[in-house]
Length: 339
Image 1 (cartoon, rainbow, N blue to C red):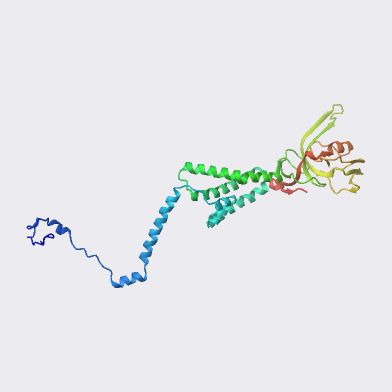
Image 2: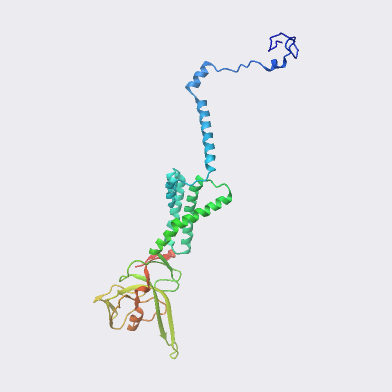
């Protein structure tokens, strides 16, 4: 056994060199390693088709991106301003981020809820579908926010959902409700009034100026006196709201001849919603800032034969008119455009 230090040939089985006393155990540990070498054909194939090289390069790149993504997700951040601005419409931000499947799901889900809410506006089911539309909108916004800052714990998810819904409600839905309320005001009918029944929901527009022929919602006060047994005198006083048609406006000259209503010398094409036979003969002018509205469908409204009732009850101040009634939206079985 040759010593690796001095080259002396020792007897087999010796543990140390007889010349330099170097341990001969190292000699058995140190050996020449000859790994297998690729042939020239294999080397040529690897140069022409570097499949394994590309695989390992792709694997290393994905590993680096995954590490960077984990580092980025650990630092909370908000989406860029262009993405935040598009949160006003569900799915719009997803289209910008090229997440088309999510964008279509959120957008069309929101539109479907709105289409079901519009004909039921002002009713209980309308509130349900509006709440569903808001939930879809809030879910779309929360999905965009959590993509930039994933929320790990349940508490963080609940808090983030509440915060997103609160911001969305204040920034988007509250201004929209104020704007919508200026043009559309739902009114729930409480008693039988002409063609309307209790439970009907009437949509009223407060903006247009009163015109002849408009059906309006207005405040009314009148009293009726009757003698049920010929001796006792009973008086019913009605205070509330009514819906009926404007027959004349301030300054118009109103005449009634043989049951025909004449306004400014021309037979009027308009009738109350609950027309009744008119009798008597009289002429008067509608005072300024008033309209002629006969509460034909109001509870307890008497006949139209007394001209004094026309002037005392039919002259309605403009300040008592709430707005123009144009649609009965609920129930759906009685959906009707008011004309």
